[in-house]
Image: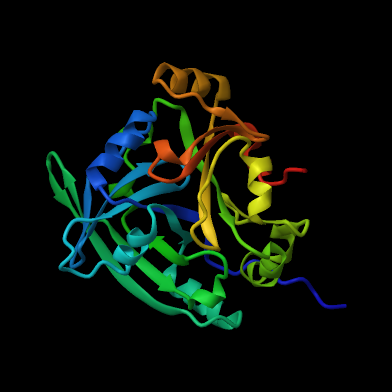
Length: 298
């Protein structure tokens, strides 16, 4: 009897999601209007990109834009020619060197680690958060544009004042990607996160990463998961939605309505359409059952 593959060492779930935006300052205002608390702006050193982040107790969302197109932008310009919205994710690494070794031992072809810093513009002066990144060829994380990120200076990016959000958000809970054949992605994600982390019914594949879950679905299933919301799909695979956990779903509903938004009920919680969040569906789910949000019948 062949043993099921275990989770690879030094990989600890989803670190953050990336949202590509055409106007970084407008994006900050748009997400702030939803009740999120953006961090001060960060600028990637040596690159032409900058960001604002929405930091949670677990995970975060990075709003990523171009501020100097004459510099290296890591193909963000090509993404933004087609659309803005969710574009990829970083899995959390507890040790980039160990992550690379575990990936190589598991039959993957990692590149790195590569160090990256960004200048974070604080009122009291700039600081330099640092990261160590490991990359895989695109075909080795099929359906998702993904890399691995070790936070080398977490104390600089996760400050208490940035973790409080008026909409009640406390954690990154999930990431939904529309794709043609979810079932075909199961073997590679079982190799990364263990066979027990992967479940599916043919039209939907879920991956429990340990901190936030992935959900790959056929386009026809989106109407069940997000009733009444229109989601343009210029290409497949296409990231469409993120989920954030909140402690009190009804309090979140009330706060969103106070701000002039009308969230749509979903099987898991409440959702806002992509036009109010720079192309991304934002779903709010209860923190008490966030680990089960991705297994939905129908």
